[in-house]
Length: 243
Image 1 (tube, rainbow, N blue to C red):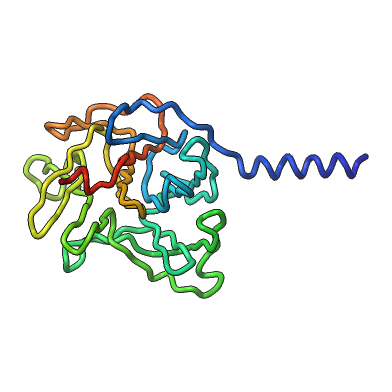
Image 2: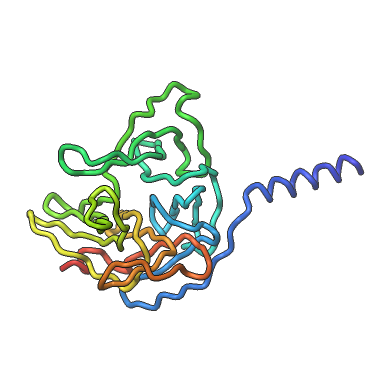
């Protein structure tokens, strides 16, 4: 009997270790965009995979997975900081935990792959444990549609009192750069944008925080009442939205 009780307790603790976060009600009603949330995630950052099968999202302090289109979320790692990019190398995914300043091509990079996953993000291990190089990088918040078109995060700042070293952080935008010219992709949400991802079907994933900014001035307005991590997903290929 004692052995049976012990086995029940182990099973209970095991199930708690992989507790799922329940789905949240969606407030966005738009013909071109879907909104999904991770309860208590506070901010969404790097995204990897697809909503159609396995989607991985870095929040302010954790990594989550969903395999049921965002209805439930499984926490797979606690980071105590965001992951700014997921880099796929053959059968390995590296989590990039730093952002560099702009390089010689005026591109910011997500860098420093300190840990990795061999099973699509369900489990993680440290690179240093196996003498695996942590020197990894990829373009930060930038996706390529083809050789002529890039979609990237445009961060906006406003100098305080004319001092370029002290700035207000304004609303970030999504910039579409094609053949040397650029335009801003208009979206139906006012949340602060943190990252971008393109899945294999050509749909765009926009990571966001709860901070809401005025569309015209870019000034900070308020914060949503609850604190979920927010991801907006285009319902069709992003090419159809930018044409």
